[in-house]
Length: 225
Image (cartoon, rainbow, N blue to C red; front, side, top):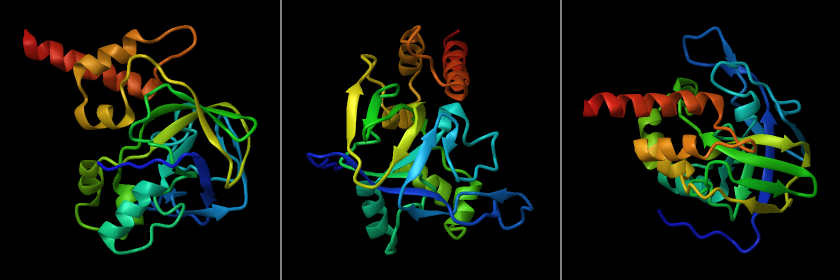
């Protein structure tokens, strides 16, 4: 996968829900996935102020407070699909430039602007709501997953305002080396163990991801007995 980060990683757009829409063609439940760019947002440990998260079982919360997507990956999809992938089109809150999100190490921490501190938590897993939002393209969930340009969810460790042009600085990167893209693509038991072994007083695996890591290890153990 070709990646050419710029010398000045930054936020190029901030987004929140424009209008609620049905999760799927047959659903009476609503989703806040339809997002568009605004002048600025305030991020908090529970999400972006003014954003809508309706499916709280699978989205939002402390470990998925903010979803970031790379402008470079959006440009790749725009060329692939022959249409504009504007900021917010994939339901993201932050559109970045010069930040390799798929290559981000789970648990690495960034400063955004002057005040905001976030932590890379887990990859985005495409779902039926996303497929419906993209016009119910046949096979969209599998296609998006197979390409692997997932973007990443972020924990918010210190909240504050974020606006286009804010710099993104990587402050720390865990030694385990398991990236968003590697975990999403491989689900390697060795990586699952590395992530669990890396837990400390300063860092804990996101709750939903922890359950899946344990499942991967359990399945691998069962397969070797």
